[in-house]
Length: 398
Image (cartoon, rainbow, N blue to C red):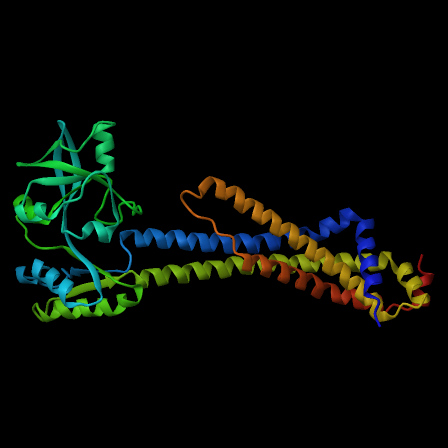
C-alpha cells in the first residue's frame, strides 16, 4: 500500500528546498489560470453591458417601418389607425407608440440650436425608458387639445439654462412657439443610435402636422408583455400591416432578438478564442513543468537510488514526483486566481457605476481544476522515468 503521507511530506520538502525554481516553474500556470478567470469575467461583463445598451431603446421591443426602397403612395404610410389596430388587436402587446422625427433649427433664449424634433404618442416614455429630470411628460390633455408644449433633452437644458429652471420657458421653431413642460434623458444611453440625440425636442404627435405638414409615423414601436412573446408579436405586427395596406407595400418589422442573439454569439466566439489562448498558456506552462522536472530528476538521481535501496517501490517514487507537479500547478493556479480576483475587485471600484463586474466562480473552479490537471499530466512522464531508474546505477551517479 502506498504511503501517501510520506510522499506528500517528501514532495513538499523538495519544493521548499528550492523555492525560486518552484516559483519560476509555477509562473506560467499563474498566468494561465489568471487569464481564464479574467477572460470569463470580461466576456460576461461585456456581454451584459452591450445587451443593456441595446435594450436601452426598450425591452421586449419590436418596431415597424415602411420600406421606402419600393414605390410608395401616401396610403402606405404608417397611420394612427395602424397604431390603434396593433395596440388593441394583439393580446401580447403591453404598450405601443408611434414617432416622427425630423431635423429642425429652433431658437431658445436668442440662441439658434440645430436639433432633432420628435413627435411622439402617449406611451413613448414607457417604451423608451425616458427619465423626466424636471417637469413632467405629456398628459392626455396635451395630446387631445393640441396644446403647444414640448420637452427638451437634458443636454439642451444644461447648455442653455445652466442651473436655471428650463420648465416654463418658450421655444421657437420657425413660426411655431411652444412652452417647455419638462426636461428628459434616456434611462439607458443609446449614444445617438436612436431618434433620441443629445439635442432633441419632443412634441405631442398631434403637433407634427402643424410644424411639418406630415401626419404619419415613421416608426411604430410595440412592447411585448414578456420576451417570449416578441417573435409571435413581430409576425402578428407584419401580418396586420400587410393586411390593411396595398399588397405591394413592404414593411420592415424587426425586433432586438436577432441583435441580442448576435451579441451572444460574438461574445461566445471571443470568449472561446481568448480561452484557447489561456489554455495554450497553460500547456506551455505544463511543458515548462515537465522540463524542470526532468532537470530535477537528473539532479536528484542519487536521492532516488537511495530511496529505492531503502525499499521504496517504483509506484511510490512516481507518486512523489507527481505530487510535486500537482503542488506546483495547484499553487500556481491559486496564486493566479487570487491575482485575477484582486484585479477584478480593483477595477470594480473604478467602473462599477458604469459596468457591473461579475466574478464567475465557475471560471475560478475551472481554472484551478484545469491548471492542476495539466501540471499533473505533464509531470507524469518525468515521474515515470524517475520510477524506472535502476537503483544501482542511480547510486553510482556523482
